[in-house]
Length: 454
Ligand SMILES: NC(=O)c1ccc[n+]([C@@H]2O[C@H](COP(=O)([O-])OP(=O)(O)OC[C@H]3O[C@@H](n4cnc5c(N)ncnc54)[C@H](O)[C@@H]3O)[C@@H](O)[C@H]2O)c1
Image (cartoon, rainbow, N blue to C red):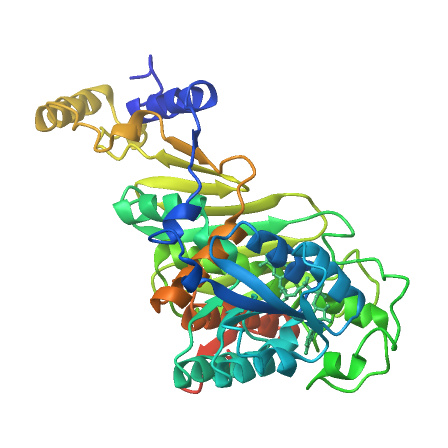
């Protein structure tokens, strides 16, 4: 035994590592856009939509909509006049209807659905009014600004029988579909530990966005921006860097945790809030008057597993989710996915018998080999090498996410990331922030639909 200190399992591990580094080819996944619609979209099936909020994300959506079959933008709405121009440019339609008043959009009979891409604190009111006006709703993530908002939005969608999609687009990505397939296949065994992070290291990543030179009380409807938030004098920093302020956003929880949690919910089919969460973090670098930390780490207890999340604005670690199972490990890193099996076939004890005399060791090994005459066959064909996948070049999961939503609008079959799913993911970000700001464990009281101190 001492001549060959590597066990078979350790040997196979080294072998797979070497193979993985040299020969495991990445499978480039196929885009799925055409599958999203069961058939070519007839002109009579065209979904007419309007975007309420045409800032960064609204314009990204408008541009992406040009690649989605069977949809037409018939209106845009924003509180800042220059964003009307930006929106018209994004849809290549200089005469599309534009307004500051979202009710003028909801009043239009030719609008089937609305895309809500406003600051988070304004999602609820527009969402409720849109549902009451009979519009289907794609609402950007995080769905809610508070748990109370989220449940009111779920109720509004149900009461008015609306189709809703919430905007964590990874849920519709081909990469995440492959990850879910691997997870559901059982190849990972039981997964009790999930670890994810999303780290960025730049002023833009930390939302230090430039203020446009024409920003003023004349070009921006400040009162409507505030909505139900506390009164505040005009301040373009608050308008353009709203993610930094608790009145309008949820910091890293609402910006990035919610994407990670939505991905985890989708892949594992968990569709409930965590039981409790505990956060740590701090504001270390971006001390520019913001209210949220630039580093947050949160431990979540779900009934079936534990999840740890981190967002750090002081290192460019990128986007990562790891699923650590009893039979294998699956890693999503940016636009690639890898699965590595663990060799769980029985093998003789190779460590503790070092403390045995040779005769006992030999006796034990003889007996073990008599009990295990042949090593069991590897269960999965991929067990020798693992698997690796990547998004196709130029792939947009936003296009697929929109396509899934518009398909739901046509078929009335709900999308995966509907209002209930979106509400649960958003509660995850509220739990993280509650724990951070209260310096205590945050407990989800499901019957009261509230977060309480643990
Ligand atoms: N899914 C993603 O990857 C992703 C990426 C970025 C942002 N988002 C989400 O999209 C939303 C918008 O983010 P953003 O980066 O575009 O912010 P932004 O500040 O660039 O744009 C928000 C726009 O909403 C408008 N607005 C606010 N209240 C309004 C109202 N009552 N009526 C009409 N317009 C209103 C503002 O005028 C502003 O132009 C947020 O919920 C954010 O979390 C999602």
